[in-house]
Image 1 (spheres, chains in turn blue, red):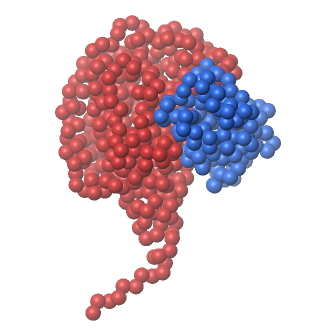
Image 2 (spheres, rainbow over the protein chains, first blue to last red):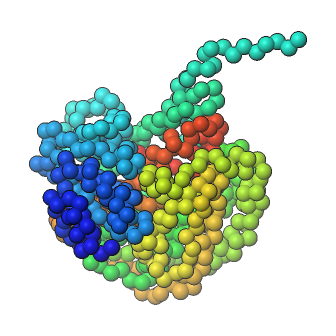
Image 3 (spheres, chains in turn orange, blue):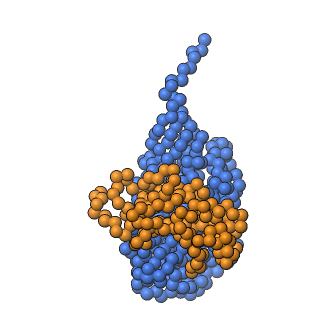
Length: 149
Length: 373
């Protein structure tokens, strides 16, 4: 599918989504409460068939936190980048590890480093750092002196 | 009359034991918490982070030239490919076209690194299953590639040979001859690998039908590289999103559909042959020219987001850069193939014996610094 066709079919599923073409990939921004339903459609829809989540990144944008999902279809080889942002005080984003199972570890990593709460995640714990670690190191306002090694 | 065997109640209960962090078959500092019923694995829970260095955080205060040296230390057996991912992302962001010579040399180096990595995997996989001879054979042959690397790049394991815009140095005059000698040598030796291990009845008993993964699950878990291709998931970045000179060479993507430990094993063996084919097509046709384009000493990427995928020895390696126009990235994320492959370990090993867990882990070929980052 070309980017224009992708745009049209995604807007048909979720009219509130915002799509714009980046330098490399098509970018899709969606509200966090709409994300889980859209994700199911992105994988389940036979023409879209985004079945391969090849990257999941947590980002601190300063005012908000966000998660960036890189998705590819293994049949059509089209790629889309989905961005979901969350409030910094209470960052909640629905989990998608029931749709793409690789997300389970990736979401634990984003929780570990940025403190993003993935709702309905089966086992949301720190994955790399110690359970007693204070703060979230990849946040821009993280103070490294609170943890002494 | 034979005595009646009474199984104590405790034997029937689920027990939890640690495998690692210091265990030879985890190939590094990884702790697996196993839930066992007798000898059968009920659940595997990986505990990572023993050698977590916070590389993603470190990149935020480093320049792109410095970051190259950190990427070597992720998957140290795919050092060239990891370097390439960062270099290609930077070059794409700045619209720099590297000379043909650079592309060809990078392709050859990547494939040599892939062969060396698969050799080391082969010898440690053999040793995991109790075949100690493999270890000596594999290391003996890998040594020859490391010698080639040492002559040109100056180091044997973590070379940091690529830099944004090209290469750190030109090729050693002996390079072509040595690579050609190696290919002749290794084509003769590779059948010995098959005789020693691939057709070995003990090895087949322990690998065939063990640790099965369907294609759908492999895609869902993001299992890439030889592990994913052993399940029939066509995920070769070199084929689907070519970089370097991969669009100019002919090679097959090795795919097998069984999805068990043995198919992951055979994919790697066949990939070594394909890598040699690629090198043979290029080694006599290295174009003349510069080995790097001149770059500014301080590289500032224009504001935006950049993603670069490469095929490392263990799967798809990715670099995601968010730049705010500064000399260091605002956020840099490494998509590590081993991290995703590890997440599938629980599904792969459920219902198998502990000894099979060692075989399955060996067939996934994880490198811990790449998981922990």
